[in-house]
Image 1 (cartoon, rainbow, N blue to C red):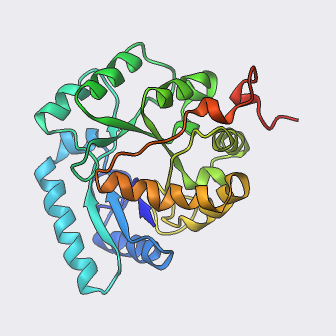
Image 2: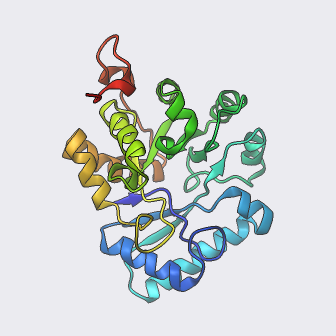
Length: 260
């Protein structure tokens, strides 16, 4: 499996604090079948306290440590890029990072509210030849309050990355229900851990989320969310996903599917 969202680098954000934490998380990920993990420290933390060069060097250092300890996991360079009006310019300047140097970038929208610059800024990013992979939309207020917005972004060519723990209820029943409806309607393309700790609800274990998703969308589609699609993104391949409208009955709102 391939994990595209992980706060596993030591001492750079609110994830792993020490090298020992990183190794413990990596060991759990490898034992649960993850082969490659994208390291995605928050752009804000890196910009304010470190540098892109530091992140790149740290990933190399941690990969050497993983090899020394015979942990079958490879780290790759990425970033969780919070969306603000400066993000297009930050990509141009190289201070915002794409996913493994590909055409894709992990983009996090604000957790609360809907800023008036969101749609225009995402469009500008696409004009740069970058495909936004929207981080954990199921946990964001703008999509919870305006469900059609995610479908609109997917229709325009963006991908969505849902947290595996959301499928099994680690973020509450409301988020679980929203996630399951997104799954039913073809609005989930990638499941990632968003890991912060080796154990608990923010662990790097992907199988529980994959298995729960399989009960909704079937084994093949669930497998694609943790293997085929994230691997294609890491390899800079073109990912084609069906329109979400194809998964919804005519004249029926997608977020009402599954309601009693």
